[in-house]
Structure formats: structure tokens, C-alpha cells
Image 1 (cartoon, rainbow, N blue to C red):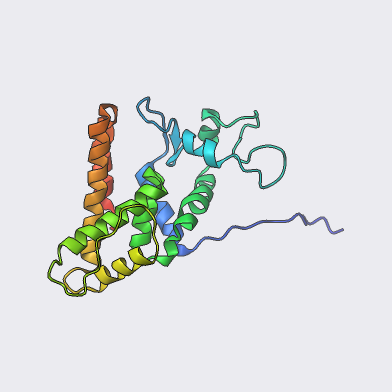
Image 2: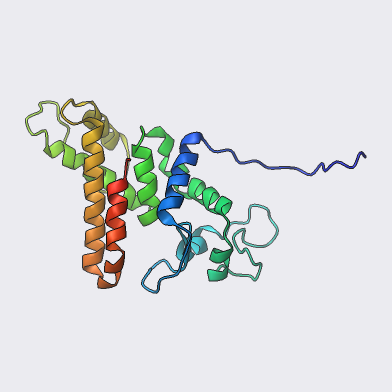
Length: 217
């Protein structure tokens, strides 16, 4: 033996596109936040306690502890959120949002907008926003002979939604600029609806609207 460490090293590589999206999200989400009105509980880098309990119970290293029971006390709680490192958040963002959305399959910045809104409101909500944005664009082309039918807003991104998306992107009077603008608006509408339904969430509305306005930039 020559004294060198021969233990296995596992490296997780991310695309430049994902890395850029994650860094932007870090600026948006910030660090540790613990607001009583936040329904997700204590949050760090956008990873809430509610989310960590649901997704952090994996045991990929088979050591008998949940991988995100970071203090090894047998449960996942606020202390574990506080112990999160940025690398942990990047892993969770990628595994639970970027990959599940298949964000790389969408043109920029559609994948990034979906990613941002999925982290903030869940994958189903993000997909519904895309469908609403497509429908908003379709309404702006009432005379187009080839215009597809309006989408059912169900969060299922299949052939029908993708075909409508391609039509919007390819229609000269619409294209990517119209889709981005529509996505921002439907995201803002969603935030306004949340605040209207639950007055305790109004304190977050200004920041949410700024977040919506930054989508696709």
C-alpha cells in the first residue's frame, strides 16, 4: 500500500443549464427563513421542512438513517433544515424538480420557468401554469386557421400540450416572447389568488409578484 486513499468517490455532475438555473434560484430563495405564516415551515435555500420530510426520508447509502436526517436523531425536523448545505439543496432541486419536470427537454427559458415555479409551488402547479400560458397565447390568435384547441388545465404535459406549445412558439405573432409574458402573468395571478384566499399569505405577495416578473429573464 502506498498510503493513498482508495475509497470510492461518487461525483454527481449537472449540466451547465441546470447549474445556472440553480444559482439563480439560490438568489431568489435566499438562505434560512422561519416565518410563522409560511405554510411549509422553516426553509433554507427554498427547501422547506414540509418538503424535506416528504423527500428526505431516502436512505441511498443504506446506513439505517434517512439521508436528510442530518443530525442523526431519528427524525427529520427543523434542525435538519438548518443543517442543509447548498450542495444538499442542489441535489434535491435536481432530483425532485429538474429531472421530474424533464426540464432539459423544453427550450430555454421554458424549462427554467417551470423549475422556478415547481420549487415554489409544486410540479403540478408549474405544469398547469404552462398550460394556462399556452391558452392565453391561443386567445391572442382567434383568426389563425391552424390554431389548436384550448388545453384542459390538468397539469398533464403530454402530446396535446406539447403540440400546442410548438404551435405558439412557431406562430409569427406569438413565439417565445408572448409565451414568457403569458407565463409571468398567470404566475402572478396564481400568487394573487393564494393571497386572496388566505390573508396570512399577503405578507409574501410583493416578493411573489417580483418573482413572477423575473421569470424568463
